[in-house]
Length: 79
Image (cartoon, rainbow, N blue to C red; front, top):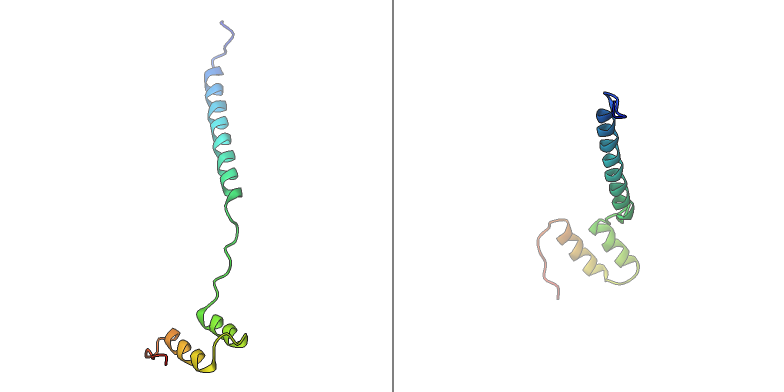
């Protein structure tokens, strides 16, 4: 009668909900694409100590003391 069939309001509601979902999905996609994808892998403390020893940044004695502390051994005083 006035240009609307009996299903027009239902179709408009479905289109509005679909459009809102599309807008929300686009916003979520944009936010996720800006987030850092991969965090750098965490290096275990023992491996860091081994690297420091290999680069001669710490002595063998310091390496042993620090490794014992990392492994949960008794705390040792550094001279």
